[in-house]
Each structure stands twice: as C-alpha cells, then as structure tokens.
Image 1 (cartoon, one colour):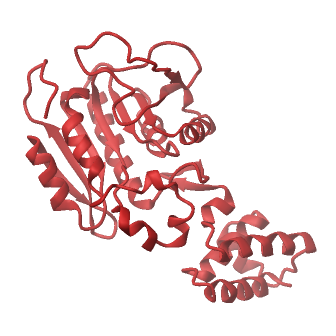
Image 2 (image 1 turned 180 degrees about the horizontal axis):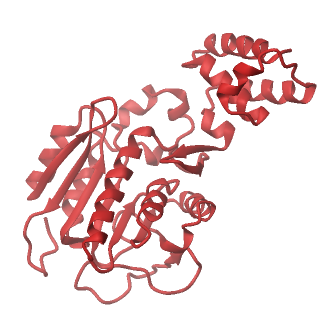
Length: 319
C-alpha cells in the first residue's frame, strides 16, 4: 500500500464513521507514524509502506474511527508552541484557550517590566498545565501557582512542566477552588495542605494575593454534556466539562470568592462558553467587579472576560 492509497482509504473509512475532516485526520495520523511533517506526505505519495507501518497506522485509524481523540492517539498536542502531553486525566487543550494564555502572559510581562516586585499568577483548575506552562515560559520572572482538584490532572501537569523545562517555577497544589490558599490577612497555613513545588523543595508556596488569576473553568450545562461530540463526551473528564445546571456555577464561585486572593490592581481572566458573555458579565457586576473587557476568540465569538476588583479595604474578604 502506498502513502496515497493509505490516506484515501483511511479518509473514506473515517468519513463513514462520522469523523470530522477525515482526510486531514488520516494525514496527521500517517505523518506522525512516519515521523514526517504532514506536508511532506505529498512528496512521498508513491512510497510503499512497510508491513509494520501499515499495521500500526491501521490500528490508529481504527481507534480514531471509535472517536478516540486524535490528541490521545498521538499522545500530545501543541499549545502556544509547547508540546503538551494529553490523556483522559485532563481536558485536551483547545485553540481558544491559547488566546487566554496569551492575554495573561502579555499582561504579566508588562507588569514585570514596570518593575513590579514579585509578579505572581494563579492558574485555577490547571488540568494539563498548559496555561501555567505558557505563563512561566513567556514571563520567566513571574511566580506561578497552579491548582486542580484532580490528583491525576496534577500529575500530568507536573510532567508537562518538566518536559517544557519550567517545573522549577510553578508550584502545583491540589485543592477545590481557592481551598489551597489562604486569603490576605491570614497567616496560618491552610489545614491539611501539602504544597508541591516544581523542583520538589518543601518551601511553603502559598501566596496571599496574586497579580493575575486566570482560568478556563468548566462551563458546559450538565444536561448538554450527553449531546457533545464523542471525542469530548467520552474522553474528557466530566469534572472538567460540567458547569452545573446552566454552566455558570464556577463563575459564581469566582465572583464571590476571588477578591481576597487578587491584588487590588490585579486582573482576573476567565474563558467562558458560546452565548454566556452577558450572563457572566452580570454575575461579576452583581458582585461589584469592574468588567474591563470581553474579548473575542479567533472565530469572533465572545470568549474571555477580563475584570478587576472594585476598590476594597484590606480586610474585606467578600464580593
């Protein structure tokens, strides 16, 4: 079987099973198996595949036909140019989230260049670690904390940070929401908290306030999860998708709980789902946040909220 024949037959097979962009999917799988850039396949259409190459490629195509995500089959995906390992332990990073990460690191870099001491950021619900890794790599002077409720996701994130050589600048902590941190004004370490620095030391990394809090929280309404594409519904962890009855539970938590953990002139940046912009804006404005901007993604859909806390006294821990 030649390269061209393998692509054509596999594309037809995938199309018959409802896989989107079947030709592209077949090419990406074959290119990865042969260790070639995808476009170089076009220069090798007449090359005959070996038996081993054919068998391995066929198995990957069968897995893709069962709607296993391409990224899971390949084992990784690119996020802002960084190689991020993926698995069932965490949400596969989406292209839309690259814009969130970029907004975050650019703002951190500007703040650091203004000689702000100890620039800090919190990636809440880090999943694969992709946002925290991008922030750490693009703004080396910043101190990054990354949390997740899932031990499996944190293990994956730590591995990704090590692979991208930023593990020493990210403190990974397990916790639900802000439970891993103490609000400003509290001195004692949070009970039962076991922080893990990327470099493995035992220094307490808990930070009272951050310059930036950034997150891509779950935002799919619970009842809609079963209607999602199988690649998402059956392979992404449900806790990374389920945003409650209306998809907005986590935005209510952020609006009510985040202020004590954000510096008075800090920024909050959150991704949200299609059609949720006005509802998310209202949630934050009702909690006396200042919504500075709602940014569109690459397809011109409202996708990212940027907010600052309204003026508050040092002891105020509410919204």
